[in-house]
Amino acid sequence: MISQFSRYLSLAIFIALPSYSIAAGSLETIPKTLNLTRHSIGYLSILIFFSAYLLAMVEEVTELRKSKPMVLAASLIWVFIAAIYVSGGMGELSGQAFRASLESYAELFLFLMVSMAYLNAMEDRGVFDNMRVWLLSKSFSYRQLFWITGILSFTMSSVLNNLTTALLMGTVVLAMGKNNRRFVTLACVNIVVSTNAGGSFSPFGDITTLLVWQKGVVPFADFFSLLIPSLVNFTLPAAIMHFWIPREKPAATQEAPGMKRGAKTMIVLFVLTIITAVCFENLLSLPPVAGMLTGLTYLKFFGYYLQQTEEKNGSGICSPSAKEDLDIPSVDDENQGFDVFQKVAHLEWDTLLFFYGVMMSVAGLSFQGYLGLASQFLYGEISPTLANILIGLFSAFIDNGTIMFAVLTMHPDISQGQWLLVTLTAGVGGSLLAIGSAAGVGLMGQAKGIYTFGAHLKWTPVILLGYFGCIGAHFLINGRFF
Image 1 (cartoon, one colour):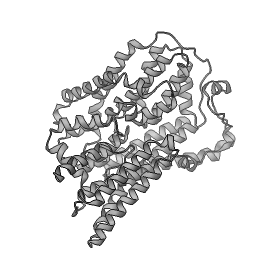
Image 2 (tube, helix red, strand yellow; image 1 turned 90 degrees about the vertical axis):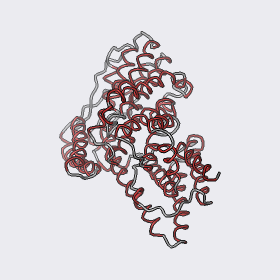
Image 3 (cartoon, one colour; image 1 turned 120 degrees about the vertical axis):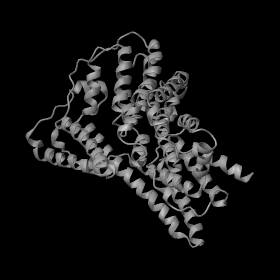
Image 4 (cartoon, one colour; image 1 turned 60 degrees about the vertical axis):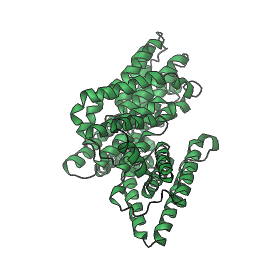
């Protein structure tokens, strides 16, 4: 009876893991000599974990940054583990497990740091503002804008994180649809679906695919076999929602867009950084983060060039009237300087520290044996296909990166086709509910009172149709992997 309880309790933990997870470590290589799943320390760890998770969920109500309870939870969980192991004369094993998890976190932290630094630099140069102004300068109808923002979201999220992409497209939608509530609601639902789908076929597109790629269970090129299933996931719901979009045209601005000096070069350098990371992994057998850090030097040297030459050059920026229409902060001329380290300083440090808390907490629960029990149930007592479909449905409630981290920590013995399936389902499953992904949560905050949990829920059956449609497309197109 106790064993049965522990098994289902571990499965509940797996389902309820919090959002924004981190890279999967090499925990399966570390000896686990003590099973703490039925120990008082194990139950206390679960209580602390859920308490921290609850505090993270109500961050907007308590105004307590989500990183604080999660980092504390991770610390307490590992203190409990270390106390048990040290008392048994096995302190080296717990220390080894902690260091393996910390190494994995450090690798993904540096990867995300470089990516965020580039995004902040491009934002400083007006790249994203330029895109918004360009879209607003065209006389697109609401239906055209619905598809344009969806396609752009799908494309951009294959290289940018889904939250950045969703907020960028959300700004356009709110500016264009300020007089049409129905358009804004449907366009936001479409953006959430398209950003999550777009990140599911690219190793750089989402934390889920990044985790799988860095773990090495799926080769780089094979991720792109999920392109058509991801397109099905996006286009099927969009085609149905299309008929509910108003036919009218919003008012367009006639202002010409512009970017500051060096913007286009930074875009090229970001692409070169991605290429460098891929080459490091495929040609040199070095981790992708090594290539990303090399790419950071591209930006640093180019920043030095901008600093040395800025006094001799003007800058092209959006006109004041356009910025006023778009609520874009005014920017002084180029004499304000460009400093790469300022872009690093403006990273989402609360989120990155939250990453640490989540990763180390989950690693601690795995080291205690809970994820092993969940793996035994999911991949031992039911079929892998059903397990992976259920995992995707779970991601409607929990961030997909966290769920993928748990799956990678379980390290089930499944075919590459099943690994691709769980990558797909975990990536797109978060679209089923507004709280299932960072894109949905971000848009709810951006479009308060218009795009809500209930408004999204009305279209969940349509999104679910796209979910099962992409699964069917995967089995039809990628049968060779099974």
